[in-house]
Length: 235
Image (cartoon, rainbow, N blue to C red; front, side):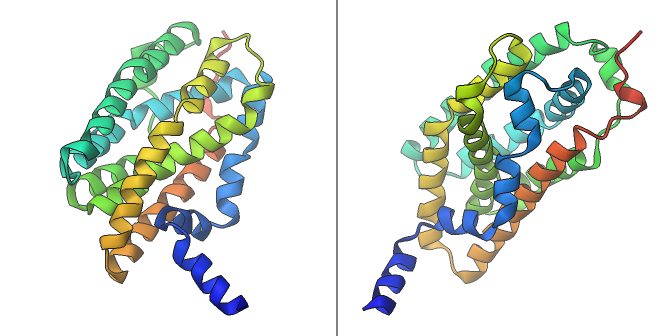
């Protein structure tokens, strides 16, 4: 009876949940990274936040390309509609948030930002998103997108109740991601549907992309603290 119950449980576990489980403790490290806690406390070093936002904004274009490609490859109109609505959110409210932050943070003019090189994790994200958008399967596209949105929804929900609402640069970044519940549900639904159609090779490709994206998410948080000559804001 126990073996039958365990087998049934494994069969009932969704594809997206199995991918998250494959990330193991790294998923927990991303969701509970010190960056998110310091962000919510309002105690995050502004140099760290500045570095983080400048690098995050760098791959917004690649993210839009990937999301648009996923919408184009979706299997029916019903599967495309919510993706289009999410695309509007990313290119509207989220992009506007970046622009407002760059107006108030020191040394964040376009000229200042153009002098700052891409971090290796930023380049990695851009390459991953563009490569999957151009050559990946629908399942691979969804796997990368899901990591980006599911990890951010998870950490935002974890810190939301304790967030200090004084500096919009901090608390609005949390707000932008606590509202991703429907987005994550949408991406999981589509990926779970793909999981039912993929052969073992296709599933392994999705898992490889998923885990690659999780690694980049952890690297990205760590990179925010690796301050250098371009990150000085005094003077």
